[in-house]
Length: 77
Image (cartoon, rainbow, N blue to C red; front, top):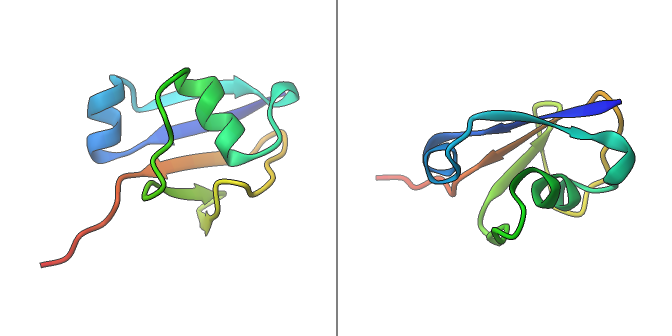
């Protein structure tokens, strides 16, 4: 039972990883996934979250087999 976690762009550079798996039994929300995947590093309020390739809030529920992705804030120009 696991959840695949992906980090993109500057988040992957800062954290030193692009992909990890976390135990689905120990998490309920995307924010829990973040904490289990990265430890004490705070999930910034502007970090974007996607669950199974759909944008979601950090408090959205996750389940075994889900894919959770974290993206840095998007800027335009």
